[in-house]
Image (cartoon, rainbow, N blue to C red; front, side, top):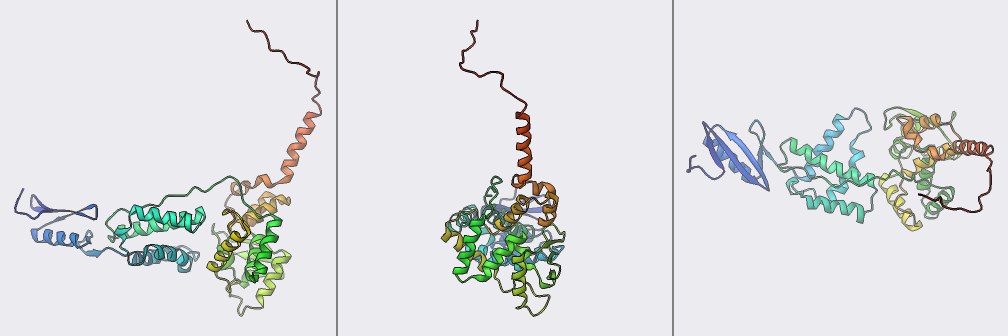
Length: 360
């Protein structure tokens, strides 16, 4: 060992090994000469990272990392369901909390835990929304690290458990109450969108991406081309949805216009939270509940389960069978079978007393 070498550099045969602790993580490099080793050590101490070709990279900020990561996500998407607009709201949440100028290496586990508390306790976001934000935050860090723009290991956020028990749906009384709140608050557009989701069962993004040339007023059909499963499907319009579509069509200029272009997704979400709080509903009443409601109403109305599967765009029959307890015909058949069996079973005698057996 050469004791004259600076701390952090050791000589191994004809090469020099650089090892330096930076922000709690050991960073190493192997150099051919002492000059290269000294330069590498200086870069490490200035917060710069070497890639395999010796190029110098600065650690990204949260703002830069988010921009680069979303560009990558959109560019590699196989269909048009992934675009920059889809991530706008999530980006605002992450950037506003951490700050766009924060270095990625300054995202500690404590900061990530505080972010989780912020989402769940202060903002009261749903489990699925909270988990998705946590995934985006982690994937953004991992994306940067793999490209030499982050030294420390990405920090994961705690995952909230999504209950698979009771399926929340909107009762007829709750629906009337919600519609009345929207109307009295002067939010007729929000009331129409709520009714649209209840009657069609479309996912939130499917409804907001719907165009007028996807709505056939003559046949009463709505075709959804961009779906979660990448399988287009068609649903029929109720009289209420027909009326809403006819009114909205008067506002349109081109058939390629989005049906709900006048609606802001973020504004509708804020109005939904306000409605839920003022009417005293629990946090489990989310916008996606409208989709659950449509499915349960179709099944409770006696519609064949495979027809409901096609209507909802479920990828398999098991998805639809989660709602099987809403099929009254099945329950009626079951109790009828029990009644028929009980008709043939007559009690032999009436038990008037009970004495325990004598055991030896």
